[in-house]
Picture: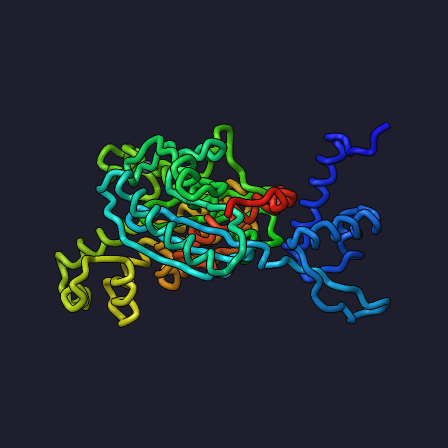
Length: 414
Ligand SMILES: [Zn+2]
């Protein structure tokens, strides 16, 4: 007879460790007794799991719970210092890189503009050079890197780390996982930007305890992260959530989308649609501060500049955002009717203008979703705003550690 655990026992042990860690992450500070109560595991099993998580530096004790009847209990929380995470967001026209602790607190970051017409090799080289700076900055903390997360628009083969197709970048079959792991020697995770933003919202944001929510990631395109029954919904091939390419009009004269089709929802509600609305308004009416702001700042027409004009009370800017908000709201209403979510969260580059978009989104949702659904679903801005996918890149690494808590013992690459 052997005392070595069987493969089944080892699997059950890691599953229970992950279950305990996920609960501590979502509900901290929490006591061992509360963990036993929620999981249904007996107290000695929970104590042994917690000891192992504390040994692995994933969890630490934090003060006592002296509220209520009974013996004061030691409370547990996540240890933010177990290691660092490197996140890379490849946007359509920018790269954002950050180093954070295990709880997504940013220690170092850098942003660079890119040219969407460049081929992917140039953009990858630009990203790799920023990643090198990030690694140097992180090493000063003398903590191990737990992994690198990379987010990109478009459809992603998550298991292979390959971008399959990004319509707004015209990129196909880019093996980001292999390229970034060769250069960093880290474990690399690649994910669609909206999916990753949904994971960040669940781990670090406003939906920690929400089982059904949708993340709408709006910028050059509009992507969706569908978080259903407590986890990300991926569909048959892993490409679910391409809500921006939902065809809402089939007329031949509709705007051509970057995916090649006409009448995709995102062409009415993305950042180009707002810029086009402003251009059309300025052609017929010149009483706007926008041309003056562009001249003063030597800037092209951008969403932050239009937001600045709206802040100054410019009606052309305010009305263009309102029109886009109504177009967005139609899509939100359809999503609410299909999924009956508890929340829909708006994030991504376009959410810098969230305060101008949200009232019209909410009003359109009220008009176009079924009344019972509308009363249930809350529409809100992500606390991460334009950084939603960057935090998403961090979150997909954190989520892997929470799912596989023993991997921090493997000795991550230095
Ligand atoms: Zn499309």
